[in-house]
Amino acid sequence: MSDNAAAGTVEAQGPVEIDDELARHLENKREELLEKFGVHDEFPDAVLDEAAERTDDIAGDIETELDTREDLRELTTWTTDPIDARDFDDALSIEKRDDEYVLWVHIADVTHYVDPDSEMWAEAVRRANTVYLPDYTIHMLPAALAETVCSLVPDEDRLAHTVEMHLDRETLTYEEIDIYKSVIRSDERLTYTQAEERLDDPDSDLHEESSLVFELADRMHEQRKADGSLVLNPRRDRAHTIIEECMLKANKAVTHELMWNRGVEAMYRVHPQPSPEQWDEALQEIQELDGVSIPGEAWGDDPRIAVNATLEEAPERQLGKIQFAVMKVMPRARYMNDPFGGHHALNFDIYGHFTSPIRRLSDLVNHWIVHENDVPEDLLGLCDHASDQQQAAEKCEREYKQFLEEVGLDADAVNNRGIEVVEDGN
Image 1 (cartoon, rainbow, N blue to C red):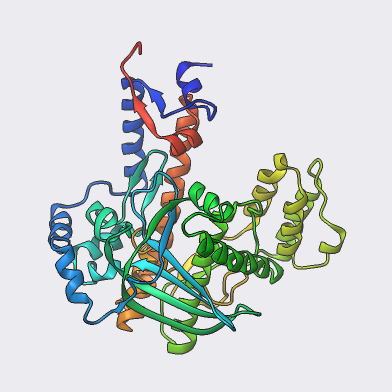
Image 2: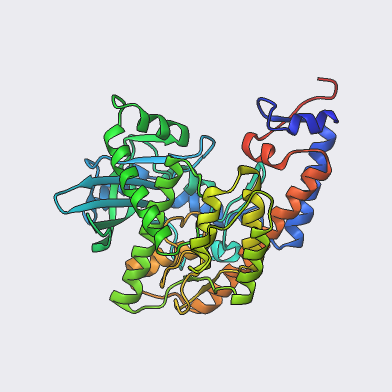
């Protein structure tokens, strides 16, 4: 194995080390792929200037906004993100009452700074999403937003768009949904590892809140599986389960409000279902894997439930093959201006994105529609463009990962640990 290949293995410690020559090869390949897939890296000066101007007086701006927003700064609130995250755009709060859970999902209020008349909005439309390559990110919006005013850092007042959900203690159904602008103050920033530790340590800060939100998230997860939602990663840890389920619940709440309570167009996420023949093909391929058997009682059920049951019992070495067999027959999800068709994989009648407006155009647009009750011009065109750009980003990422493997680097190691350029001979 070459030195570069050895440095890229997951067993190695610290950043993946490469020399100057390989670093130039990677840079050239990135530039080639970005041009090929129409991904824009550098921001125009007008966009950067506007971002700097709109984030100039953070404290003064927030002080002014307190007059018209819900003040939630006394509510216990925290974020949970990967250890290497640079921006923290979602936070949680929770309470358990006599007959309900109250779950607050706070999302950085990006549309306070980025509106349809701004240069940043136009650039966000052009890019449509943040592109994540291993150890290289091309942002949808300037870092001045993502890493400052729209990062819900601890012990700092921040503007947020809050989804407050009152959930029945027994059924977990929405008893009340309230979506509003707020000011929050995060108490702590947790990594996923720290979140796991808080769950295990009864004497730690946020242990009670973490345990309560996991209690709720675990029940939501099991309910979702029982209802026929496809769960391709059944062995996710508790911290990831908390974030995934709370964000799904918030996204679903927002699109429920938009469709049923307001009846407005929005950027809904629609995922068609495979044909019965395609599902049969996937299940047959799974059944033929060594050491894998679809539980007998699951064969006659919804194929999503059959896959869920199989994944829970399958050996670890076969999980990737099961997931691949399912993904091969799945149609692509797309953004649409109405929710007709629903989201097959999640088994939701209505679904859309709201929880990541700093990195997805769909969420940014939906934030604007929720608050202004105003649908941007040519919404269907925005949906088509966002869908196409997402597909381009995925292809770009896939080809870049393939290139990393070709030059002897482990793409996952690069993604997880980053790269350090070292001089030849060191």
